[in-house]
Image (cartoon, rainbow, N blue to C red; front, top):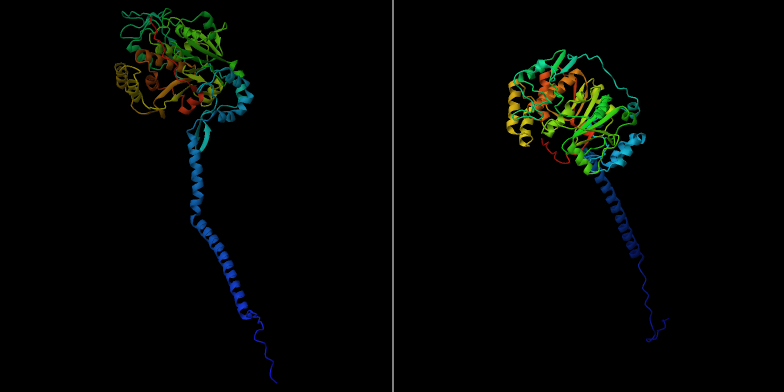
Length: 483
C-alpha cells in the first residue's frame, strides 16, 4: 500500500544533534590542558626551591662572611670617635649618682668644648675596649689612707739647697742681680751655678748638695705670710699657675667629698693675671679662694721670661710646700678632672713608683724634639744648638727608647712623691731649664739619663694623660714681665 504524499507547501523543521563521540573528545582535551597547567606550576615551584638550596649550599661561606664584615667595619668606625655626652652619662651613671658634687660642678660651670667632661678615655686591649685610667671604686676612694714614708730606702737620704748664706759656694767675682743679665739667666733667685757645680750635682751621694732656686732672700717670687702659712698645712697638693695673664682658671672636677678635705688645690698667679681675671669678673674671695682653688698671688717674679717663671711652681713644689708628701702638677691649659687620691693610687702606689709622667705622643727622642722646637719657633736655633751640643758631648744617646719606654716625655702633668731622690731630680731639671732653653721636655730625658738611679718612675701612655684632664689649650698669649 502506498504512503500518503505530504503537501509540497507544508513547513519542515531541522534539528541538529551533537555527536556523543565529539563531545567526549572535547572534554578529554580540556582535562589534558588543566593537567598540563597544574604540572607546570608544580615543576616551577620545585625548580625555584632547588635553585635556592643549590645557591645556599654553594655560597654559604660568603653569606656568613658579609654580615660579619659589615659588623666589624661598624665597630671599627667607633674606635676613633670620642664618646658623646650621652655615652658619658651612661658610662659614669653609677659614679655620678653616688657623687652629688660631680653634678654640682657641671651645673656651676659654663660648659664649652671639652670643659667639664667626665667621660672616660678608652682603648682596645686584646680586642676588648678598656678604660685607660683604672681608678678604685668610689667607696674605696672614700676611705683611702695616704701612705707616709719617713724612712727612704733610696741612695739619697738628704738634699741640701745652696744659698747665699753658705759662703763655701761663693767664689770669684760673680755679681748677681734680680733679673738675668746679658748672656745668662742666673740671678739672685737661682744663684750662679758654675759648670763644675753642675757636673758635681749629678754625682749621687747620700747627702746631695746643689742649687735649687730661692738662693737669695731678695731673689724674688714673694708670697704673703698668710699664703705661706696655708701652704705649710698641705700634705697632698694639686697645683697650677698662670703668669702673664695667659690662661683662665679651670675648676677641678671629679673628686670625692672626702678628697676635698685631704687635698689642697693651689693656683699661682702674678699681678698681671690678677688684673686680667678681675677685668673679667673673676675676683678672689675674702677667704683667698675662687671655687676650689686657693689663689696665691706671687709678686716680684725673678725672670723676664714668663715660661721660666712658670717652672718654679712646676718643678720646685717641694720647696713651696715643704710639708707636702705628694703633689700633682697640672698645666694651666688643662682642667684636672679626676680624684687626686685615686690618681696617686693608680699611678704611684699601685706600681710602687715615686714619679709618674706621660710619654710623648708625637716624638721619641731629645734630638727629634730639638728639631721640632726650632721649627715651631719655641726657642732660637742658637739656644737649641748650645743645649744639644752639650748633651751630645756628655754622651746622651740618640736612642728612641730609655729604660724600656719612649725616651721623650710630655710634662703637662707630673705626679710624684716628695722624696729626697725626686726632690734632687726636680732641682737638677730646674737648673737645666735655667742654663739652657725653657723647653723642659728637652732636658727631662737628659736628667733622667744622667741621674741613672731614679728607676721607680711610671711613664704612662698618652691615653691616661687624656683621661686625667680636659685639654682647653692656651686662651691668650702670656705677657712678658717688664723689669
